[in-house]
Length: 315
Image 1 (tube, rainbow, N blue to C red):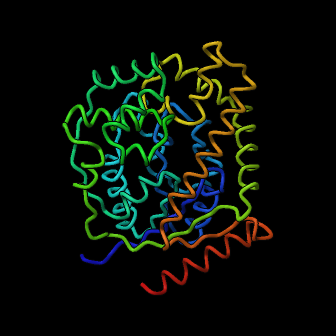
Image 2 (image 1 turned 90 degrees about the vertical axis):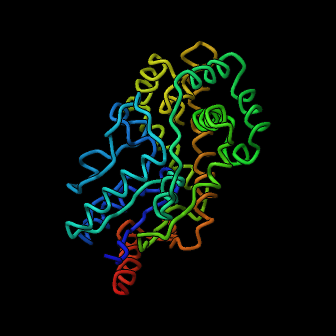
């Protein structure tokens, strides 16, 4: 069958209300949700990853949520493979796949049908790189990446330790930089017909206020306990380097007050949201809905429904 699979993709920065919108879309159009969030895959983590609760899911099946352990290796190539299977299954059962998440690399790699060269991980090399970072700091490790692969370094942040480690690990294993491998990986003709719905705020300060409110709520729900669990686990798994957790580690080590750690967490989350917006703005196919332009959620949902109905009518 050569027909492209229709996919509704709900994307945007953290705390912009993607989960609620995706669920309403799935309820309206008979869909199921496929997560595109690199941290919600872990079964052990709930609060800091903003994993949707059963109540928030409203009975809508959610795929690729809480199905891996923090000790499992999991790459973007693994995600693309798993998400393709989930989407095919949903479509074959006569449902509409609703992709939802803010991990831009996951979204773009999946929907552009990128083919990856398989590169295994090396626990020994990773441990060595993490040890170097602990002894010399994230910036020192990032400098290594800038020397070896300035292209990859320009696309990440020194504090995104898992990505920096992975790029250096790939170079040590293969002798080729991550950016060279990414050139070799290439998008195939997409097997999806995608309707992109982006949700954010026209007023950036309102988004930042939402982020602060969410973090305050996460603190009440126990995000600090999850961070302590990861810290005591060793702090070298990918999840341990996620925003929302690593900001607590200086506090746990007695190097920073709890109040300062929370302040850093809020600042880093704002910066992360800004990077997400920058990433998604490159995609001109996204229909952006600015939450502060609508009087309430119902009006926002109706605007999304209209866009999707027009998209589906053309199929």
